[in-house]
Amino acid sequence: MAKRGENRTIITLGCTDCRERNYTSEKNRRNDTQRVELRKYCPRCRHHSLHREVR
Image (tube, rainbow, N blue to C red; front, top):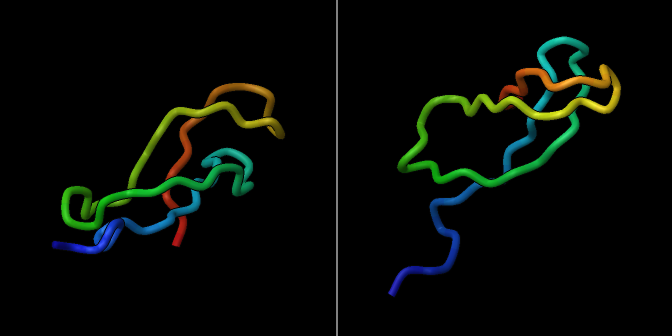
């Protein structure tokens, strides 16, 4: 039996407009090998914008 969360890593999402790191999330390394991109609300910009995975 595999350990829980063995392939899951914690990632940080940063706003592409203001470069502030607003959110953290988990992703599966095996299923999602590319960087994650999500449209989320940025409290600094005060609108929804694209948030990209930051390394």
